[in-house]
Structure formats: C-alpha cells, structure tokens
Amino acid sequence: MRERSRVEETIFAMQRAGAGSLQVISDFDMTLTRFAHNGKRVATTHNILDNRLLINEDCTKKMRELLNIYYPIEIDASRSVEEKLPLMVEWWTKVHELLIQQKIRKDLLAQAVRESSTMLRDGYKVFFDGLAEHQVPLLIFSAGVGDVLEEVIRQNHVFHPNVHIISNYMDFDHTGVLRAFKGQLIHTFNKREGALSHAAGLRELQGRPNVLLLGDSLGDLTMADGVSEPQNVLTIGFLNDQVEERKETYINSFDIVLVKDETMDVPNAIFRYITSSRDNK
Ligand code: TMP
Ligand code: MG
Image 1: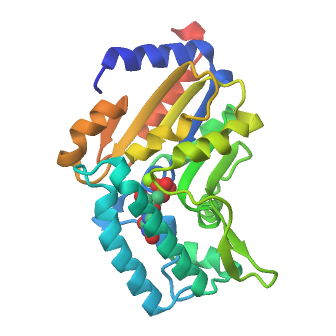
Image 2 (image 1 turned 135 degrees about the vertical axis):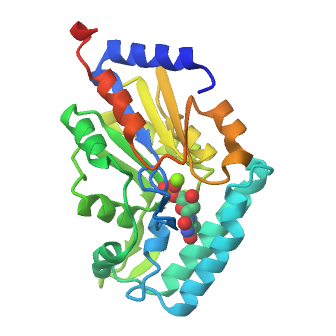
C-alpha cells in the first residue's frame, strides 16, 4: 500500500455507507482466474480455445507465436500505454481473424472449458456468493472472450443474477458456427471506452457511488470511468508477472497491490468488513 491511511479511510467510508452503495468492478483473466497453478500458467479465455475440438494445429501455432510476441509488450514496464495501444489492437485483431477462420462451433465451447486448465482464484466462491447474498452488483469487464468467460463461471456455479459482463462476444451463424465478434473490440488498454459506452448505461449499477475495483493490468484502472459521481473508489491490483520491474508503478497506481497472491483473501476480507454491522464497531 502506498497510503495505508487512505485505504483505511476509504474502507471505513464504504462500511458506513453499506452494501447498498457498493458495486464491484473486476477484470477476469488473471484477476478472477489464477495466474499459475503448480508452477504452470493457467489458461486465459482465449487460450481455453486452444483445444483440438475447436482449432487446428496450425492455428494453435500461430496463436502461440502471437502470444510470444505481444504478451511481453503488454506487460513491458518500459513502454507507454500510447505505444502499446495500436499493438494490442493488432494482437486481438489477428487472433480473432484466426479464430473466425476455424469455424468454431458454439456447442463445443463447454467441453473445451471443462478440458482446460482454467481455475478461479482460491476463495472465489466466498467472493461471488457473498456479493450475490448482499445483492452487490459485480461487473466483470474483460478483454477476453465473453462466451468462454460465461461458461467458466457457470461451470464453477457462480454465475449469479448480480453478475454483469462486458467482453468480446462471439457472433455465431444460424448453424452455430463462429462468423465474427460482436461490437467494439475490447483489449487491455481501451477499457475506458467500454466503461463510458456500456457500463455507464447499466441500470443495476446506478446509485452505487462506492466502487471496489480489481485488476491485474494498469489498463484495468479505467474500468470505473463510467461510474457517475463516484464517492469512494478502492483499487486492488494483482501483480502476477514481471514483479520487480513493475512493482513501483503498480504501487503508485493501485491503492493495494497483491504480489503473486493466487487468492481472493484480501478482497474477501475487505468485503466482509464493508458488510459487517456498524453496531459491532
Ligand atoms: P482480461 O481483460 O480478462 O484480463 O483479458 C485479457 C488478457 O487476455 C490479456 O492479459 C492477454 C490475454 N490474451 C491471451 O492470453 N491470448 C490472446 O490471444 C489474447 C488476444 C489475449
Ligand atoms: Mg487481466
């Protein structure tokens, strides 16, 4: 924490206002999902599609080559966001074109998710169930693939009615074959635009000026830009990779930085405090 007193004051203010004033905005890949498990990287929503059921060997090879080129750029502490922006558009556009060529079938997505290495962070159930119980809306804002993301949370039994998703959704033809991606492309560094055009209009989020924001990328910090008249915003950043190179920037950007923490323990503890009874304090 850069400023412990600010964090404490924000949490106190959120607790005084109660769950009715709160909304949670979270990134998905490597924020709600784990970064690694037993020393191996966990699949992102795009990487879940890397399954022979859905794509051929040539496509796997090309997607991995693109990942090897562009992921290091995404997390490069020495490059500016302005510099990264067009490169991220390039990465996402190329990957989506490759996926469309594969004629992916909608009815096979669930099986690909089941066979993948994807895993939500430890404590995810307490997190999702707690928010649902207190009717706190959870906006998942992801540059991943929305259809895959939905299947991951469905298979983990946490796709509750308070969950709202903004992501890249697949457009299937009438036979259930992928033919395009819907709407404006979302990548790691244009979430501000999505926040203003989509999140700002979500009725369920209105009248909730307190925001708990979770992300693993600096681009995730703009996910709350669509909140009108925010009062207390607490940002939590998961620093998973390139820790030493990025620590200082993360500490200067997020209110709380969790280093190589594969759990939801800190967000869960904060939420528990916010929803605890004022009489017990
Ligand atoms: P997020 O916004 O839910 O975190 O999703 C974006 C992440 O997806 C980003 O950190 C990079 C990752 N990604 C892949 O793993 N493979 C891909 O092919 C692409 C385009 C993105
Ligand atoms: Mg992420």
